[in-house]
Length: 272
Ligand SMILES: NC(=O)c1ccc[n+]([C@@H]2O[C@H](COP(=O)([O-])OP(=O)(O)OC[C@H]3O[C@@H](n4cnc5c(N)ncnc54)[C@H](OP(=O)(O)O)[C@@H]3O)[C@@H](O)[C@H]2O)c1
Image (cartoon, rainbow, N blue to C red; front, side, top):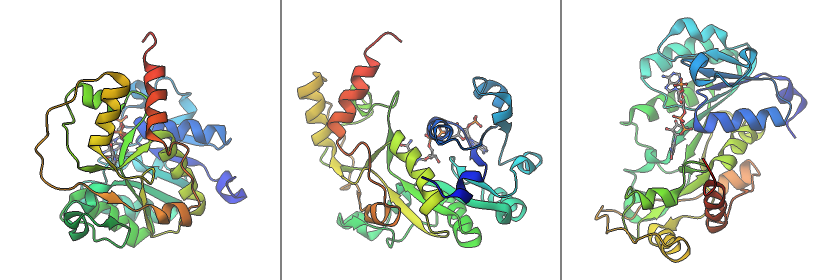
């Protein structure tokens, strides 16, 4: 359970898209006061009560004042451009209780660990030539933001078997790291409670898998045609998530990809 202080702080979700919506519903289940943001809430969040949604656009300073003082904030879109991120930090940085920023494991793409196929923990250097990484690191080092370096997000309507069916993924032995959106949302809430300000945490289900394993499952269990080799160079990344498990004490609800994929297929095979 969240601490008393955390439970009382309003939770603000900046960008209520695929992950933000699940954070919203999980936070309501925990009886938190939630405010969900969108650049166009009347259309994108039309299904939410008006008092739980507001306009927020990183590129429009006039929208930033709507974030209440003392709020817990979960930021779910790329932290770019840097000048807007810096201006946002100056205006809002010190009046948030906690700030969680969703980053990406692509920050590690050019690290020597990746080239060697070594396990990647949070001491691995991130690529500061990537604009979103600059924004994340600015918020982390200046305002104590907690950065979640997130693996491939999957879940309802983002089914990895559909990526294979639709030819978005080719056959290879490259490694891939995945996280179910239900786990990612729960990790955002857990990080607000137990994360150390200024730290980053790798986020996946803890098991780097080879695409060839997932494709073998797709072929044998779902009768999906084997895709052509993708021919991409590189080994893929192998993410180490011991800090997530130890530091945040989080145990994933979807550790077994086969079970999670079966569940997605079952739920998506019905009428639309
Ligand atoms: N997809 C993956 O596999 C993957 C993997 C690793 C990391 N990530 C990262 O994880 C985060 C969450 O992913 P997601 O798929 O849940 O994202 P998403 O569905 O795109 O949701 C983010 C929402 O943020 C809002 N937004 C975008 N730009 C904004 C801006 N400049 N100012 C204010 N709001 C803005 C948009 O909503 P409105 O249009 O309603 O404003 C958007 O729907 C993203 O940063 C993504 O890059 C994704």
